[in-house]
Every structure is written in structure tokens, then in C-alpha cells.
Image (cartoon, rainbow, N blue to C red):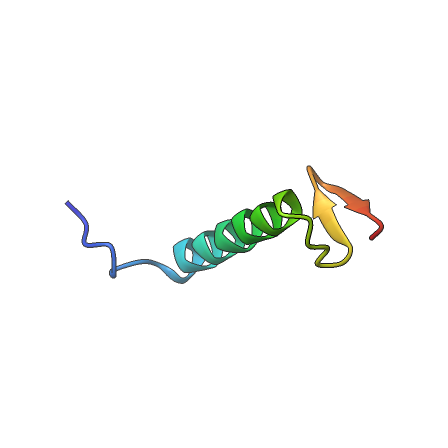
Length: 46
């Protein structure tokens, strides 16, 4: 069993990216535009 605070730098980076993606989607659902982003690997305009 691995403790959640014992992560490799790559795992930390992946978790950070996932948090950013979730935050962006949550804001979009609520009508808040956060600027251009990549969605499914495609750059989209704001």
C-alpha cells in the first residue's frame, strides 16, 4: 500500500493536470469562459 503523499514527480504532475482539466470543465458547465484550452488534444478558441 502506498501512502497518497508519497508520489513521484510524474504522478504529482499528472494529478495537477487532471485537477486543471476538471476545474476547466466545471467552470465551462457553469458558463464561465477561462480562455483557449486543449479539449481532447485539439486547441479550441475562446
